[in-house]
Amino acid sequence: MPDLAQNYRRLQNALSACAVQSGHEVRLLAVSKTQTPEQIRLCADLGQKAFGENYVQEALEKITVLRQLALEWHLIGPLQSNKCPAAAANFDWVQTVDREKIIKALDQYRPETLPPLNVLIQVNIDAEPGKSGCTPADIKTLALHVAACRNLRLRGLMAIPDPATSANGMAFSRMQQLFARLRENHPGADTLSMGMSDDFPAAIAHGANLVRVGSALFGQRPSKQITP
Image (cartoon, rainbow, N blue to C red; front, side, top):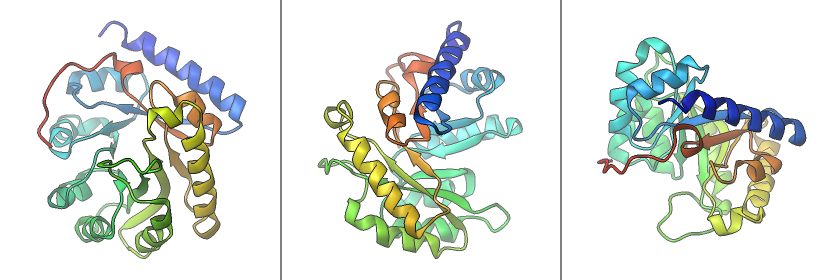
């Protein structure tokens, strides 16, 4: 992948500029869905340590092959109940928690030998039909459930806004307000995950400190069907 190093440097420069302008640090989550272990290894060699995967089964193969690199793995796709044992045991972060049933399962299956699983509550900020995520009104209750779990650590909020609202910043602004409200009762919540390849500058301007970037780093994903 000859352009990976160039893309990574360009992206890091852009993130640094956004961070200076916004006044807060920003972390990059490399979205590695459909990427091969070798491509992830090359990216890790450039200094990237945090990777996001959409599907548990696809990720497990990569986590196993690349275990010696001690990478940080985030689940950023919808989580089904039957995948909770594997997700709890193998990921460092789950960004897509949106209901009490998933919270209980992750807490139950997180091995006691591992640190608490970092959790973000996913918010369906634009109330899009068929999209995962809780309503803004549900955040308070779900946060209390996560905070009560011994094997989970509440880290903040995540959203994938409708492009029509992210373009003008409206959804990002609402998420920024919801995150500030969450921190009033949970000051340990330190992560607002939003913004992707096409809109991360606007997300950072509205408080995002973890952005999920795939195509701007790896290039357009190959057309491939993945079974969840």
